[in-house]
Image (cartoon, rainbow, N blue to C red; front, side):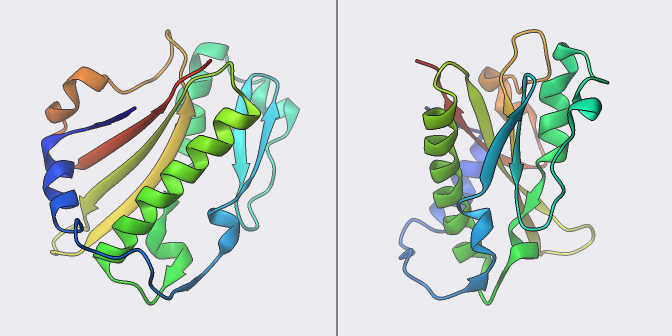
Length: 165
């Protein structure tokens, strides 16, 4: 299930006619990352990021793990792919979020995940950055209020809700 605010709807209108067959150079480990679980936390190994150790996860209460996953999973499209426009980057982000959703569901069918695309302006410019993040949904932990995404006034946001079985 996809949820988004009105700002993201405006951004998606800009790419509705964009073909997703374009050339780029980048790190393919981003598109198909290694996904692993440590205790009750789920992480992605993208590029040369070190894996999270059990000792580190044990420092966090279960209720805090979603926010930690969200913070640790930050992925900036512009840092990994070269030679593509903003519009192509947004199109690629949509594809990556969909692929990550399929992979997370296949590996952890009993868990719900929220994968986000966040578009924001780079300070004092008209340039935009596209940020992907995810977290395992925990009712008592950090999570976006999906019914009030329009309260996020400055960022366009889309959440791919990967529901559990």
